[in-house]
Length: 599
Image (cartoon, rainbow, N blue to C red):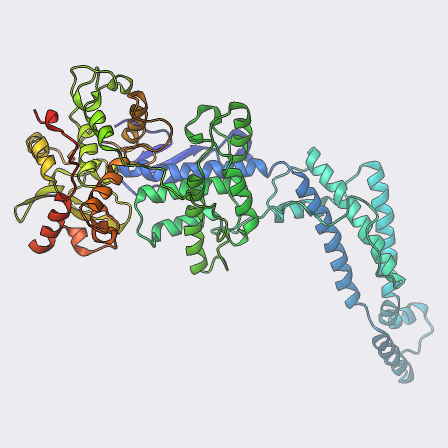
């Protein structure tokens, strides 16, 4: 098996590894990051690898973003420093001695004189005895003098371009807000000057307060309430993706690993927008709304397009203004929103959020399904086309649409036929083990499950309710499916379809799904959206409806049901199996003749 970049083997176990970009080594404090993947299986390691690499890359981008200040950073820092300076002044004034406290100190001094404790005429003795009283009497004036002196010094430093008086405050602000700006850089100097102007305005307010005037407002146009978003930084363990990994481990709805990985990728684009260090508790409708507005402009297959390599969602959309790729459909936008919503619903239940900010933000659903079943004449044309009847080459996808003498009889041949006569999903069929096809009570069945014999590509289902027993349709037996199964038994190996593989995202049969749609276009069956590999699944559902069954009577055959123990282990009484046999045998296409495929 080919080695994968970033995958490190240490003894029997695998780890993820990435080199820290040179410009971030001083920030990270390391030249390389390594994290154990917790498995000794290479296939599983590959599946666990990419989410970690993606998260590291998001963190690197977030660090880079935090090395440069944007206008909203300046606005927030300036206004924060102004308001914090006034808050400190309020607190300091509460500690100033009041008249009653001064009079009490004076009475205490006079009492000491009356008792003869202060009888000396030495000025130093008198000064020492009256020091506490004088400090209370002059506290307000001393504080005012100090503020006036600092105000004068700040104005001089601002004129000369010096920053020493404000440097500690600037560094403290940057540290508290996890902004990685080095002292002495243009951004740092600009921020220092903004904060100096903020403190000058605050000091002027304090001097006005000394005169009893609390009505003043900043005259400097830079010192005003911020209108831009504030950068948020999560505490360790509270970033969005850190919490997501807890959600993924719990998997409360029992969704397939493929779907969870898709959810992780979808939410990753949201993290691209708000930043890797954004705390989950700060997610509001504003962030989700901004993300949705970007998604409606997001190009199709952006992550697979070389021109967008290394870009975040905002950069991709900007670049696509020039490239002009079509954007994702509304239903795909809703899939992204649904992924985030499912995660945040769990986050609300677990106390990370008070409410789900995705609620009410989904796009209006399309009234009609965009996936259509094949019509009878389309099925006839398809099964007489080169993919099934003979092509020029089975090795190159571009030559599969060209007529020839090469017969495709691997998973590419059987998966569409099995879908046609069972309604199963392509990934469910592609991952079948040889042992998942067997006889029960005199009937051949397919056991769609994550249990049983393991294959090299692993097994997954969409949800736990998708695990089920599906009888093999008589037409599949007539076409030679059981003979194919017997051949695989003799050949050995766990997988029924050994050439069916997962892509780097862990999706089974992704290449066949992609190329099948292109094939339909090449042979003239498809124009635009509508027909796809999933059209077989829709066709099976329509066939059951034609036979008189209601959706709630056959949903479990398609995997639309709650999880059951019989679905998990594939053990069921003969009566239950017979019901399934009758359902599957009701899937019929009277106008379709496939006799040429069995010859």
